[in-house]
Amino acid sequence: DNELSVVDGQGRTLTVQQWDTFLNGVFPLDRNRLTREWFHSGKASYIVAGEGADDFEGTMELGYQVGFPWSLGVGINF
Image 1 (cartoon, rainbow, N blue to C red):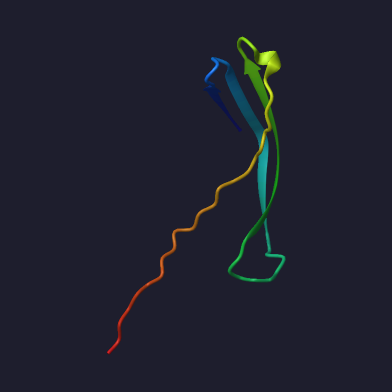
Image 2: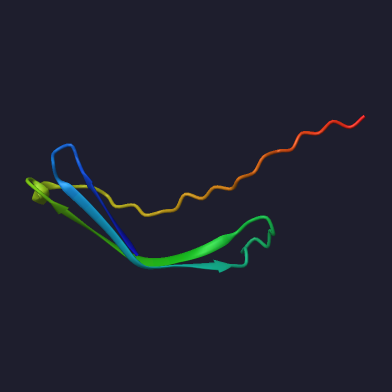
């Protein structure tokens, strides 16, 4: 559960909240042992405050960035 606020170029404050988030790791549906799959559930909302807040338009997109620290080893055998 967390909250993040940012002020845009027009002085409006955008506050985004998320709560009740849960990631359920499941066995990979493609049976590949090198992949991972999760189901996500949760709730989110946003509030815009400031002059012109009633005219605010936008799209809320939720997602995750997933990275894996991997490098290809290089070796030389003689």
